[in-house]
Length: 364
Image 1: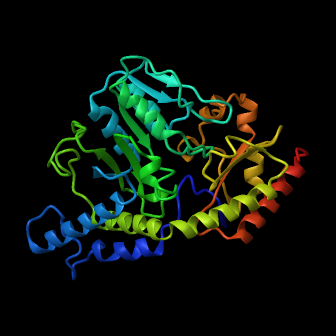
Image 2 (image 1 turned 90 degrees about the vertical axis):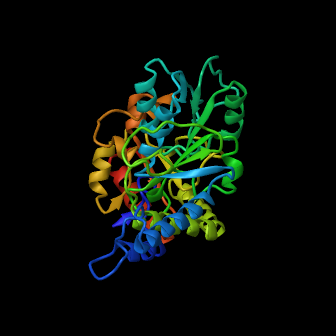
Image 3 (image 1 turned 180 degrees about the vertical axis):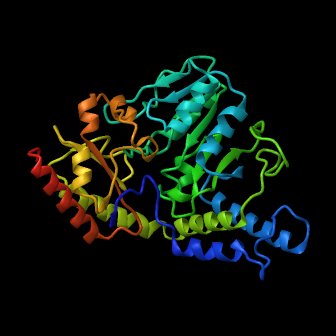
């Protein structure tokens, strides 16, 4: 199996797995202790959580705190609902975790349009009275990188909070503090940066007040009740630290894969911006392509026809439609995602199989 679905999830880094093992625990060890308990094993587990918190925080701007959650969806819900904001503006290509939560709070929330390349203009009109603006850093379907710093500055100038879903960019985009400058709330997820599933985080800028969404033991500074998993936190922290130490080599590898992928899929039309883009994402289309048949013919390749969260819905991608594509064009698109552990030979083999399947349909 060739894995090319890095936007859905990334492989667990061996270093992250090794960091988790001591905290999975067992009857003959103390690694299973509750990190909120006052005894020695509990304090040791709590210390591991705090080390992980610092490692994750290193990916994010200074001047804020990291709140561990079960994932980015919970982090986004905590940010939007916990902010108390009632008038919201969100980009048209946000993940459903943002769009659905925003509409739950504000059924008439403003949807900020994107251009044909999938970019929100830094000058996009934002209605007066808006109290929270949400624009993602890197789109999960087409990889476009948004002008977060400029939009965050505009939100702040009008007295609104700025939430950034940085799930696809955290640990990958260079100079994270600069690229997320001005954000008040940032959501990230471990399994999108080579960490384990089941843990994420919300970064909260100092001075930003939130109300808890779930209640119970008052953990995480009273904002997120529930017993933390030291193993998941440790894996998250180790994965984050690895992104920091391998940032340069990871970026160089992705750039090499991007250039190769563009050459291998030269006959396809690119969806999204070619310049303002995370190069670990290739979203392309062919007129008349039957994607269902293509995926059936390429069962030994793991790739996507859109967001993993929306797979099987049968609906055209709301992201691709926001770019101006019609339903047929959106449904004739595929997404390939690659990263640290992708081999050039795997990409070449996958492209050969996908192109052959497309030619068999007479569309390439």
